[in-house]
Image (cartoon, one colour):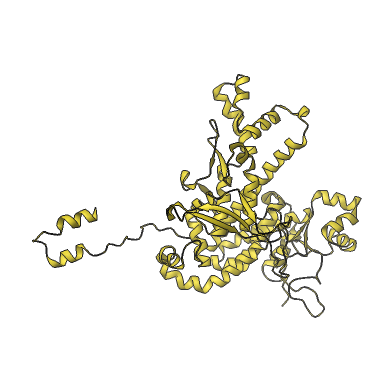
Length: 475
């Protein structure tokens, strides 16, 4: 349009020289009236925590059903299990429903609970993509094109710090540059020893998320004969169709609650937040990062540069929060009476320490301590730990058992309430890491926060208030 206008007006003798000069001046594209913005640190943390919760629940549900189908003899199948077996094998139960003469309007009522139980939902897959974007900084479309075919940097069976190599693409780069190799780093490096720590369901590293995606979409991938990493069953209300996940199909699809306010999460904003925090290019040049992704927030760049070191420290601490605390379930407590030595060995404790932990003799407000002189934190002259009890929520010496669930739940609520009393930066600095660790801990233990918090005694409530007002700190 601009070219045609220039051509038609070029030879008009009635136009002034200044107009002709302006006509051929290079036109720059104006900034969008609604540019993509990142999230505040506190809001971003809540969004990512909620995404992890959704993915973890999907894993638990799908694993449970798969285990049930694989461990139950076919002769003992009820009608539901027979339908689930057919669904897992073919992706559809229409043929069975046809044979049974089920009316068309009744089919979704039968089919939808089966598909929702056995396969990840759209929102669960969306949460997984969100975590990929937040962790890698890649475009959502690039994440959606990741391949399930991959290589590893080592042949070590326990995945000790290896790197996963797979394929993806960016079509806008052109036919000769669109194909990419993605190198997904593994997490789980202990900040004190520098050694690899094996983690279950690592939702905080690139390689960990890749393994989870392989598992969640395994059945869909096998049924469809697809090499895509991330797929979902589209159209569960009618006849479902397995398709590669594509964020453009669903637009702003993630509904979350942040600070009590319902918001719609955009993956573009999650990526923008990652780039603003790290200030490192992701499969683009440093010039593109500065001119395209950060230029519209030029006034904020000095602030980003000042706080980026502190924020990255927070992210590292958060990434190392998961799975350090030793967990005991009700089954473990029963085992403690039948085979205490076996349980102690499995937890990496001696028998005397296990007995003291179970007796409540080593409680540190929300957990118990199995080694006050084996602490990774600073010690006093006698070699005993001097760290805040809030640090116990991510300490490898900490032990959590069911009797701790109520006080952990109430502590979570009290930390959350303090968001209203402090600025996001102050809250994040004081409680951000502890809250993230506690959220992960409660999620792994499947604690109902509201119900558990009701069980806290008045004494424990006062103990928590003393903790949060600094009265339990060593000064």
